[in-house]
Amino acid sequence: MTVTGPDFIALQVRDVEAAARFFEQHLGLRRAPASPPGAVVFATEPVPFAVRAPLPGVDLDSVERPGLGVALWFGTDDAQQLHDRLAAAGVGIVADPSDSPFGRMFTFTGPEGYAITAHGG
Image (tube, rainbow, N blue to C red):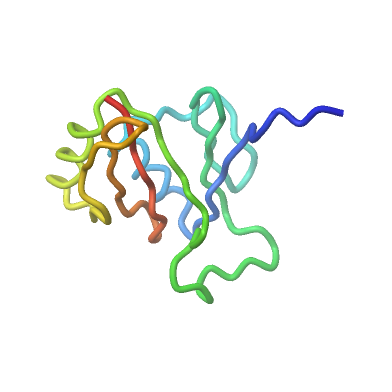
């Protein structure tokens, strides 16, 4: 048996279409040709990414911030340019751009309060 690592990531959100529009409009992600009911899958590589309705038993209203304790990073060819575009669009910036071993990086607030880090470039 061999485990190769994560091969699918999904955020559970209250409003799937609003979350999908956020990732399309602000990050330029494209929807995959097919998605299961209650979800939008994006054509991201090497790991598919999706937003989906909460699974049974998940109450997003009972948490202060969804995803607390999980680090979600998106690669980009120019983190500074993405930061500037998101900030100009009024997207909340949690951590300003800085240099790191992973390139330029910053953290912004995604749909429904998820903290997302972008790095590269």
